[in-house]
Amino acid sequence: MAKNLIITGTGGQIGRAFVSHVSQKAGFNIFACDKEPQSPFDSANVTTVELDITDESQVSMFFDSIDCVDVLINNAGIGTFTPFEQRTVEEFMSVVDVNMKGTFLMCREAIKKMKVSGSGKIVNVGSVYGVVSSDYRIYGDSKRNNSEVYSMTKAAVIMLTKYLAAHYAKYNIQVNAISPGGVMRSQTKDFLSNYSNRTPAGRLAKESDLLPALEYLISDENVYTNGHNLVVDGGLTAW
Ligand code: NAD
Image (cartoon, rainbow, N blue to C red; front, side):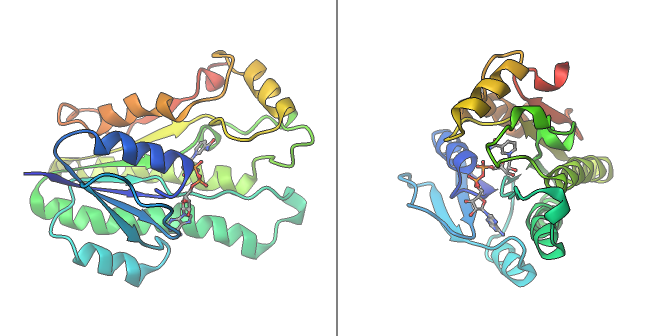
């Protein structure tokens, strides 16, 4: 029987790549969730769901609509790029809402279902910036400096991962995180060069660099890796 796999943030860069990849594997019935879904996926096993993960009633209604959850990939996340000293509470809380509250709500509802069915796998998407501070020297004039609240919330996602792994292993539920380094998109030339020089791999990540980590963590064979934060960063955090 096909497994129900839920992914959030599927309108974005990494989420789209995750859906495209898992939809090519046999045996998954995929729910691609986003607050603002983009063009539909060209695959019969993908259902696009409009879902705001910060809205408790929307999240509950969504989980009520499916009988079981085998895999949950919490990929939706946002950042903010204004300087720390100009951070408003509203802006701060908007990041907390998506990255922490949204991830918490999705985990809570999924775990209830996984407990009943007796198994499940959750992968939370953290960030290298939940592990180390960003290096301000690489950002220059890009106006894309990583924010303190992004790092705080990503560290929280990694900690939630460990907490849930510890408390739900006895129900055959594995909860792990993937923490990507910076992924290539339309960054400035200076930023790309600074970031690449700062990284042992000599470049930013491509979405495809993240796929083996995801595949491993959600595979049937993975029954013993639990509470792990798999950093996929070309070695950025190694020095
Ligand atoms: P993105 O901005 O391209 O996509 C994020 C998606 O999340 C968007 O489609 C957005 O609509 C959706 N979203 C935002 N708020 C939501 C909500 N309340 N409910 C449901 N969906 C919501 O981001 P991305 O670059 O694809 O990043 C995906 C994940 O990877 C994020 O958690 C991000 O923090 C993490 N990450 C990204 C990078 C990177 O360099 N891109 C690096 C490390 C970690």
